[in-house]
Amino acid sequence: MSADVRRALGPFGVAQAEREAQTTDCVMCSHRVEPGQGVNVQVVRDPLGNLNVWFTHPGCGPSRLVDGTKTLAPDPDGEDMRMTALPPRTGHGLPILAAQLVRPVFTKPEEQGGELTEVLAPYLLSQGFSMLGELDSTPPHLEQWIAVLIAHPAPDAGTARLLILDPEASQFFSGVVCTPGGWCREALARGGAALYVGDAGLDPTSPHVHQQHERLARAARQGRLLAATISVIER
Ligand SMILES: [Zn+2]
Image 1: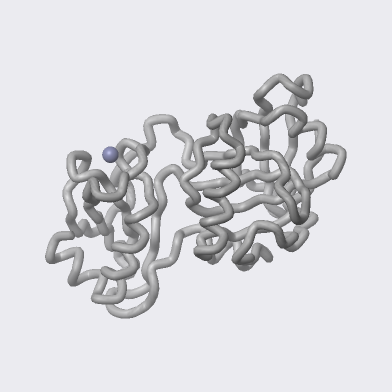
Image 2 (image 1 turned 30 degrees about the vertical axis):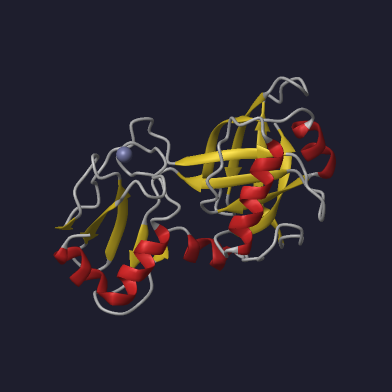
């Protein structure tokens, strides 16, 4: 972490950035920053003094403080969210959707003091998402959050096109999701899914369901996830 970044973040922000850096993706290449690999912290300060914090591999970008713009790294795929569909676990028994930002961004409201906040968190909390601390509790039901399965494929086709809309009908997510066998059928039968948002280090294409559940459960215990039960419909 460069001296100007440390100064901008302050001691508390530096400690928090070091914690967040343990489980993050590189903003430049979107690949995981592995522990022990080293990580650079980039901070962009907007004209109001808000800080936006990114993480990069040492070879992908320097640690530095930049003034003004927020556009450090264009996302090569044009997609900013990664969605993983998992079968139900014990507990609430709902099919699971887990969303994480491809390029995690943290904001800090002022230069000294104040917490680094994941950029989506305040919005999700205002919508009624909650932090559960464990995976088996039923997340609060937000009826106006709707996941739409578009052109719902055969039950075991392996992928589905998914759109998630918030109450203002703006797109929270749009894309193709790998679906475990029976996932679509189950979600439509239940009319809902548990949506978890936060960085759990999941691989959307991994066939190792148990490992994915464990990663999600660990992230929940660490307070890294916000959750809601959302409606699932078919178009
Ligand atoms: Zn990288």
